[in-house]
Amino acid sequence: MNLNPSGKRHHILSVLVENKPGVLARVAGLFARRGYNIFSLAVAPTDDDSLSRITIVVDVESAPLEQIVKQLDKLINVVAIDELAPGDAVERELLLATVAVPADTRGQVIELVGVFEGRVLSVGYDEITVSLEGSPRKLDDFTELLGNYGVVALQRTGRVALPRIRRRSPELSAVPDAS
Image 1 (cartoon, one colour):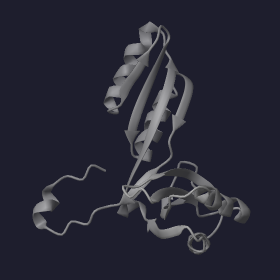
Image 2 (cartoon, helix red, strand yellow):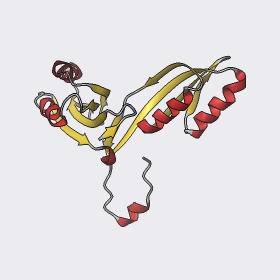
Image 3 (cartoon, rainbow, N blue to C red):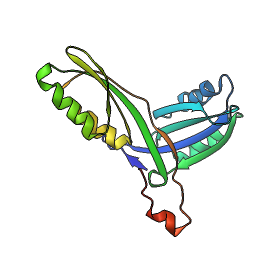
Image 4 (cartoon, helix red, strand yellow):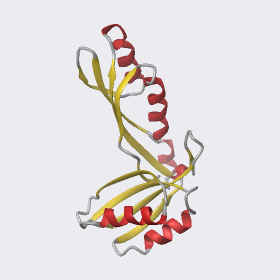
């Protein structure tokens, strides 16, 4: 279970659903009706055009995880639900930020973006737009440091996650994990 900076407990659900109109609305409606808090939500089709994956980061303080899973499982378009514990999942997010920076501090922001392995997407006379992909913690750290500059706009996608691959072969244990 994740503890975010505010101390709330989060858990990741990877929900495989039929790729049909209204399915996301039914899932979101379930959360709204029951008063469950969604911390993050991301949805996209899978490699199978008939299925979509909804990654939901839930606040387990608003309702017990077991209860949330049982309610989701009752929805007719839900095919499978995976509970992903943080140590057993690979998580990623995308961040886009526009920062107001005068020419004399632009180099500092560009250097910060480089340290975090981000990219500069657009440069204007007094603003710069950057992107960063990584773990939620990495994006939290970057956002905190970016706060020392004039953040004009900041958007995060929400988490996507898949189960971490279990390695069966000792030879593969030497291959680094990109988490």
